[in-house]
Image (cartoon, rainbow, N blue to C red; front, side):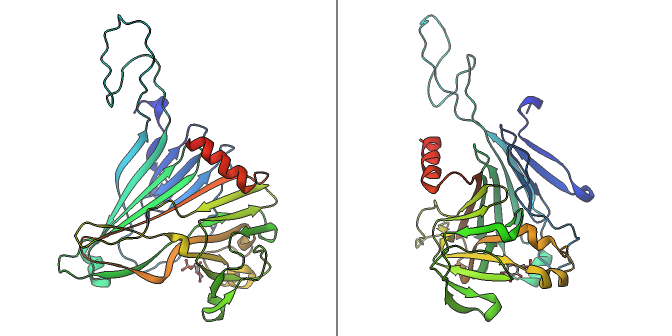
Length: 333
Ligand SMILES: O=P(O)(O)OC[C@H]1O[C@H](O)[C@H](O)[C@@H](O)[C@@H]1O
């Protein structure tokens, strides 16, 4: 790719670890490390960071292989549109879906990176299942951050396996006491701080005054996180997928709607102090809102593949939800 078109860049990050930077045309950006496939940065067009990263070093965990292989980096272009040609003497050949070389091509980029993680022999000792885990991290045309995961059972012994999944998304907020979460009101939740007992949310919107660790059930397709101080709303969507389905043949795709679960977590002051990889006051600057399948594990037979997806967009809080929908409709129409 020539330098004026570089929207995806593979480079070295902290401690020489490989990372990929995605840049969208209005200068929104996202960074993803091959180590863990972890998205460590997502910035809007003003260069403001929208994700939270702890200032402390993380813990050492016994985990299965966590360095993904980079399999594809792409600047996706719309097909170059055939124009209206008044001069019939031109001799180029136009034949959709082939592109037309010359004239003015309209490029509408959507940069993405595809990563893959496969079980190694070492992993088999810890979790004796063969799998292929694919992750696509993409920036949408308006700077939305889109994550798509596909997990495939590649067991050769005919055995199914089960797993749980979450996009543990640490959002940066200006001041947690000024944050509201909308879309989860009146829903049932399991409270992790009360032995996963089931309650019904009584508040009109969720606000934060103490530690929260809840798993909301049957959640809607959209959850809004309103950051009052920054006058910004983060909209998390976890739908837009075909219905869940299983077919009696190999190579089926299972699509699970993340709408069923959403984890909302903030450790608050005491737990923050007790966490070695978290600054004492950093709880005021973050909120975890996670699209997850944590209650019912996902079951995959050999050859089956599960797909999950999460999208987040950042918009000024002055947009009301109808305007959001209208804007999205106009952009997609
Ligand atoms: O420390 P970690 O394993 O990364 O988990 C951090 C937090 O993640 C989730 O949000 C869970 O609901 C919490 O119970 C947990 O404390």
